[in-house]
Image 1 (cartoon, rainbow, N blue to C red):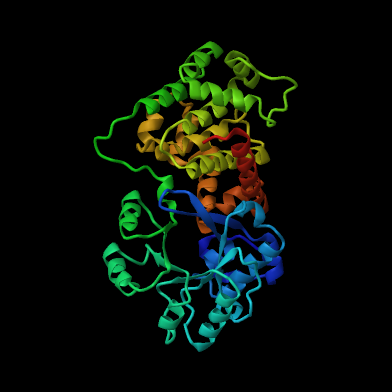
Image 2 (tube, rainbow, N blue to C red):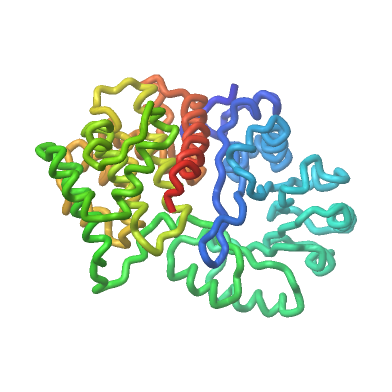
Length: 427
């Protein structure tokens, strides 16, 4: 079993055989968007893949083998949910002909691979077999120009490039028909600049951050959502108070009734009134589900933001359930949802949290990640970005949360969120 250590002792980690690593390796998906912020595919990243740059015992072939084993055992099917998958390929596996994976997976060339004649011939054969090839602009070698003619997608890493550098590099691609993909985009301003440069595909955590514009006012629908969230988180609120706020929005009322009548709750008969729906859910569940429905009612936000909010919230709830911590039912689900609100409102999270009535433990968990609840929320946030080294595995282990349990919670949350989205047609 793979041992999860802190950053200080990673270099001393002794690797188990590849098959054993693959069985236990942490595995996540990172979304790739188009210009309209629709999902066009997912990059697949394992723990070994993220550590290979800092741990000399983990090479590119090992990282690729682990992903391929996960693919061949169908562990990635739920993560991809029918979308294309992007997989980094090491040199030794590129030279296998054809690559040991399905054509629905895009072959990504590791940035440190030397582009020589052997790689050129291998990629030429891969291309003739109908695979999609993606190459990082940092790849160098004597056959770079010839290989560039085979490439379908050219990747630019925004951690290694500035916009001015990219403009210069684009001049070399004037006659290329390859699709431009920008990775590791950190803010909306960079995303907008890249769109102007005719990039078609985008990856990064910018979508999960607020697009803050100085002097921007809260819109009417956002004000309605804030009012609802304030009432939902008020421990003194009664059923009638919640009903009165929800009833002011026909969209929220419809979505709540659709939710309560979905197979998720498995009721014997239809629920036709808002009052009945709220009573059946109860105050604890209405706080969580009402908050979710409120956020998904906001206009001009991409589907992925809603999906990510669902996944993060459910993962927090599942981790809390596994620990058995003594917090109100669904409270960690609510914490996960609230932590995404800055991206929905394009307002600093501190301002939002301070404007609604939250229990002190919840406010601290969301803003500073303190306490057990904060640790769980922080884990979910690091995990969704494949930042495995940042996860405090030692504290999680002390609570009984093993890496396998965290991985299963992540996987099950994705499956659950996809099912809920389909049932409720949230967007």
